Length: 409
Image (cartoon, rainbow, N blue to C red; front, side, top):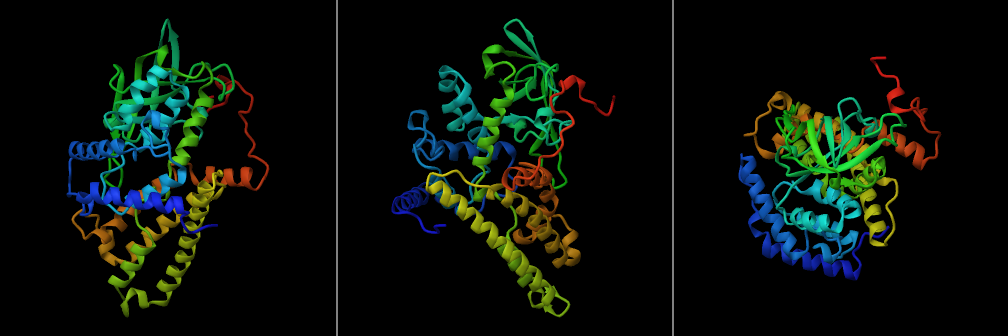
C-alpha cells in the first residue's frame, strides 16, 4: 500500500489546489444558515458550472463529453482538496455518478449529446427511480409495470426513497414489462422527464428534519419507446451498470457526518462526574476502540486509492468499510449524546455546530445502514463473493415473477 502521491499525482494535486484557491475562495467561510431550497440550488448550479468549464466536474470522463480524461485517482485527489471548502450540497452526484454513465453506455449518440452536457454543467438534475416499498433491498422484486402501447409505454406504480426527486428534471427508471418470466428477466429500463403528466412526487419528512427523500407515484405515465435504454427485458443488465457506477461514485469524502475527531473534541469539551469527560477511563477505553476502527477504515480507503492509482479494480474493502462505518457512526452518535447528558436530548438547529451534529447524526445514521446496501446485504456480499461461502437459499429462483408466493397468497 502506497501512502504517497506519485510525481504525476502530486503535480495534479498542486494544480487542483491552486485552481480551488482561485475559484472557491468564497467557500472558505461557512455557508449561510437556513438557506431555502431555491437558494441552495442556485448556489450549487453556479459552482457546478464553474467546475464543468474547467473540466473538474467529471474528471474521469473523456474530453469529448466535457470531462478531463483523467484517472480515478485524480478524481479522488480533487475530492480530497475540494473537501477543504464549505461547498454547496452535491445535488448532482446521482446524475453524474449513476445516471449519466448509464446514459453514455446505452443512450443514442443524439441523446447523449442532448443530455450529458446539460447534466455536467448543472443545468439539469437527475434522479434514480429504483427502490420500491415492497422490494426492500431486492431491486429485482420491483412491481412498477410498463405496458406497450404503440410507440409508447404506459407506466403505473410507485418508487420510494428517491433522493432529490423534488427538484429533478429527469430520472432513470427500471420497470417490469413481463411478469411471466423469472424476476431478473422481465425488466426494462427507461429515462423520463420528471415533469411528465402522471408523475407525482411526495417528499418524505425524516426524523432528522430533512426532506431529501421522496415517494414517486406513476399513474398512466406515457414514455416514448425512444427513451428505452437497452433491449426490452434487458433492464437488469442496464441496472447493474448503474449500480456499479454507484459504488464507484462513493468516495472518502462522501462519508458525511461526525467523525472521530469530532468525538474527541466533544469528550474534551464536556464535563463528566469528575472533570472533563476525556479523563474518565471508560470514555478513553471506548475512544481507543473507535480510534482503532477509524484507522482501519482509513487504511482501507488508502488501499482502494492505491488500487485505483495503479489501474487495478478495488477489492472487497468498499463493502467492508461501509458495513463497519455505518454501525460505528450510529454508536458514536449515541455515545456523543450520552456525553452531552440532558443537553443531548435537544435537537435544535441553533445549537453550536459540533454539539448539534451529534443530534443530527443520531437521527440520520440509521438510514446509512440501509442506503447503498443494508448491513445484511453487505454481509452476504462479503460472505459469498469474498469468502466463498455458500449463497443464501433463494425460494424464487427460476420461478416466474407472477408465481412467486407473496403475503397475499
